[in-house]
Image 1 (cartoon, rainbow, N blue to C red):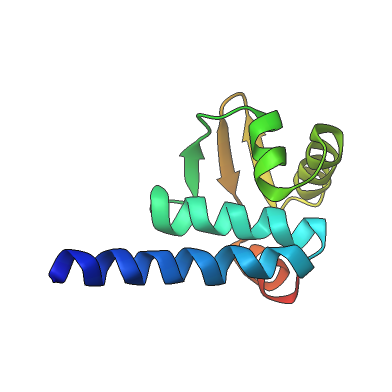
Image 2: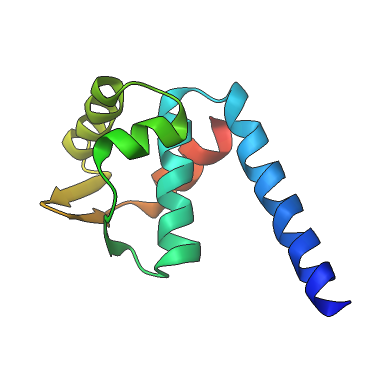
Length: 102
């Protein structure tokens, strides 16, 4: 029963998290993904990226070019720093606001 409860909670969490992304603008979608990776997966503001930019773009439902352009805007605005296969979130407050506002 405990396993079924855990699976149900995880499924509901994922449904709520990603169903809202359909109505979110691209910067909000990318901020949500960065938030999720930072807080839930790696539990750090600096984390490696083990997937390609194309795969991340497909995850948020956009083209690779649009995804990279938005990441570069985040980098130019000093919200994040990208080095090879690592992303560092410089301003979690802005990422949180973008994720919340969409």
